[in-house]
Image 1 (tube, protein in one colour):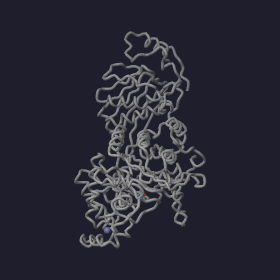
Image 2 (cartoon, protein in one colour; image 1 turned 90 degrees about the horizontal axis):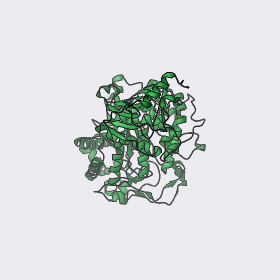
Image 3 (cartoon, helix red, strand yellow; image 1 turned 120 degrees about the vertical axis):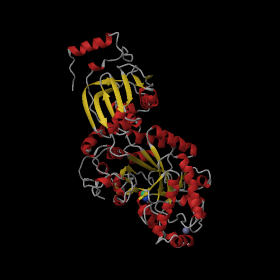
Image 4 (cartoon, protein in one colour; image 1 turned 45 degrees about the horizontal axis):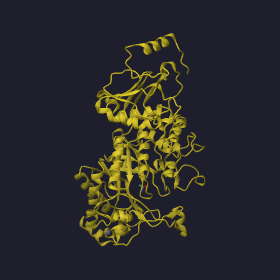
Amino acid sequence: MKKKITVFHVSLFCFISLSPFFSGCKVGPDVIRPELRAMNKSISIIPEPLSYRQSEGSFMINSQTCIIVDEDLKEMAERFNEIISPAWGAPLPIKINGQAKNNIIKFVIASDLNDLSDEGYQLKVTNDRIVITAAAEAGIFYGLQTVRQLLPEQIFSKQRVSGVQWEIPCVEIEDRPRFQWRGMHLDVGRHYMPMDFIKKNIDFIAMHKMNVFHWHLTEDQGWRIEIKKYPKLTQIAAWRDETLVGHVKDAKKGKAKYDGKKHGGFYTQDDIREIVEYAKQHYVTVVPEIEMPGHCQAALAAYPELSCSGGPFEVGKKWGVSREVYCAGNEKTFEFLQDVLLEVLDLFPSGYIHVGGDECPKHRWQVCEKCQGRIQSESLKDEHELQSYFIKRIETFLMAHGRNLIGWDEILEGGLAPNAAVMSWRGEKGGIAAAKAGHRVVMAPNTYTYLNFYQADRDTEPIAQGKFLPLEKVYNYDPVPVVLTEQEARYILGAQGQLWTEYIPNPKHAEYMLFPRMSALAEVVWTQKEKKDYKRFYNNLEVHLKRLDSYETNYRRLDSMSIPQKNYGNKPNNQ
Ligand code: ACM
Ligand code: ZN
């Protein structure tokens, strides 16, 4: 759409340029007046906002544009500079309580905007200024993420970019998230991921307006968090001698091959503090996961006295579910886990602590004197109730320390702990049962949210987990099951994507599995249901993928597997 230059515009231009009363931040001679430029950019924001209205014209950021905030929002202005200055080349000047009206970017907290929630925002871009208004800082932060996407995609570059006009189309946007839990999980147990990728992953989460990083820190194949009281966890449990080559299904046929290479690593407590702080600055809560009573073979390799049999064990080298689990009849197990959790609570301020609870085989408990003794002394029916006893005991401990327990949906078996939240991964059944019983739920069904599943025909893709999860199916997921009443649906906190890393050995591969499916998931958790439209999303991806290019992201290219087909996931809540 070309904008006509009228007499009015020319007079306005003269007035602004010549007026001694002109109150804007400086307008340099190199600057083309915005009102004389044509609007040449359509809007493509992922996740799609609640509403927007584009008008003619644009705002141009130049070296004299200044950010105007009051003292409380100074840090937010610095955050914006951090986001744009690598590509832009220098931070914009920040003026506290500045009075300029032109060539400014302004952030305003307005408590009467509560109907957009603390994470919502209003954004108004006119020829002269950008104004973000929100009820709370989180809303301003998400407004900034939108401004970033309104800029040319090169703004996502980590290197200085020259020759680009930093122009933003005039627009009015109102926006707020659909869900409060907008999560991404990352398994660092199967493969350790370096600190810079953990930070990049948080960047990805924040730029998609998601807000939870579920950090899966302990596994059969590796323990990744330093615990001062138990040094063998990092000396022994963090390292495996070698790793299975190829798919575990082939290994089962007696063809197991190992790579002969030691693999491991861990995050020191200082590393973890650094990540938690980095996440906080990006409005992301880090929810740590310490697996129990299963998925703990690595810990048992270091402390075999916590098992039923006494070991010895090695840190897992191949994938699958280990039968080696913590002994539920041994008081030392609870002492150990509570000590570990005390250090975890000290590091992570999150309201929820994830304790796993999934895939705990009962073979060892069935033949363990101590476990059977516990079943008797606590008048439990069977080993499922023993697992429930285990989780309830840990919940009591966490609640005494002011935290809530969350676990995978197996924690429903044998009776759910009184205040536990459930992460529903084996389809939605567990989540539905929990919501009906008045428990909070995060939807994470593997059929829609396991981003480690294949994205296309397995012959054409790197080795992955067995199922097929194309982009459109992720996009069409709706975290609120139709069988829930309105009241029950309130217990659905939101949803999250999972990245299990058995077949994902490094960050580059992780990015390939995440994108573009994580961008689809961002609309699942942020965008209002009635605004979701795969075709529109698919078209917007064209620009969004350029942003990911600028951000040096190794995403999977769009191809016939991603074009809108209406084949996937259109049935409500199918499993
Ligand atoms: C899981 O995939 N075992 C939660
Ligand atoms: Zn036992």
